[in-house]
Image (tube, rainbow, N blue to C red; front, side, top):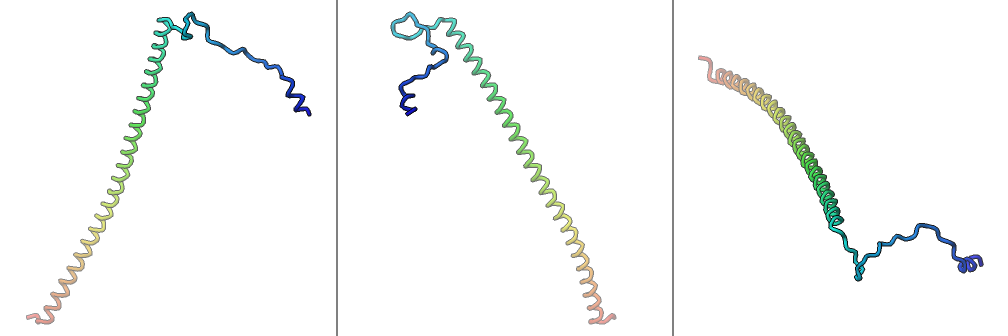
Amino acid sequence: MVVILMSFWTPPVFGEPPTAQPRNSTESGTRLYSELEVDTLIDDLAGAAEEAIERAAAEAAKAAALASIDAQAKAWAEAQHWRVEYQEAKSRGVKNAVLTGVICFFSGLVIGAGGVLIIGGR
């Protein structure tokens, strides 16, 4: 019932009156701008565009610098990896060379001593 009674009463609305564009003197309803207003608008838009271009250029330079640093970091990490691989292979190569030398020495000793024993030491 309260809802029905409320539908007959319109509460007062407080606020600012709507702003309207000032009436112009032309019949068609379009507003004519002065040359000064057009020049000011163009200057404002040009300034905003220059600022946006400068910001975009700064962001692009920052992105390029970060990409370069990232590429250098990856190259350095890979160089470190291959340096470690080289040192490990070098140490394995030295060990293999020493082991081969020892085996050859003892093989030669065994063959020489065996030959002397078989053929006889004349």
